[in-house]
Image (cartoon, rainbow, N blue to C red; front, side, top):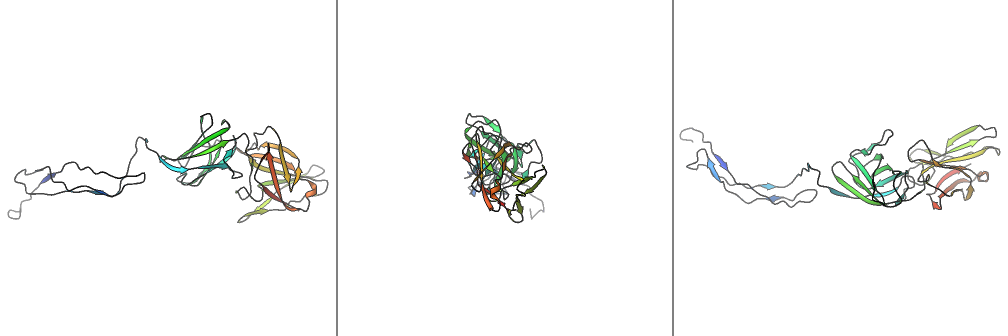
Length: 309
């Protein structure tokens, strides 16, 4: 009050304002209310010394889902063999990869067995053809790729792969479980080029020497394999996945020549990893880079290569 120097304390009460927000999953468009007048005044109630209208503008909205009853679909996920990068068929107790966009909020790897079922907030479920939902052990997660161990108990047939992030965003995609889905690991981790393999040479007296069949710098290239003396025998130790479930034939050709398979099954050290041991035909001496073709129960794996001096 300028005349007396007294302060005037006035409370103005407004009715509830309702704004209709036009919202999608990721946010809201701007919305505004009409002008509203006070419901009543207080201190002093009369005569009214203050009058104000109120309007409100909202240009964003945040939703807190404390009950976790809401989910948002993040898109489709594609499932392939982690060795060959060919899908959709994957085998029980094999290593597989899922690809998509935004599959995890970060990057994380399992440090030891038993494998975790959650990494960086991402979990995975595989529902098989009988409708059984299997929680999936995880090797590695990133926003674009998830490597996982296919549960041994899944049954063959069409399947559904579901990934869920900790913020309730989910991903789905079709899959197919097959008894075998052979794939060979390549040194470049793309299913092509030089094999991720070991050459083992056994001399006439039983002495053994081994070498990697690849050398890696920016990329991995073949390291020529020495067949040794005519009395030596050279074995290739190939590593893959989706092989151990075979009940029938396993065949390998190297450079188009049949190679004797002496073992095809679990590698027994790393989860999901399989191993195929073959005898390199001596007639390949000097052939240079040659292709390795594996077939398990008449299903062909991806083609990889080695170089033979």
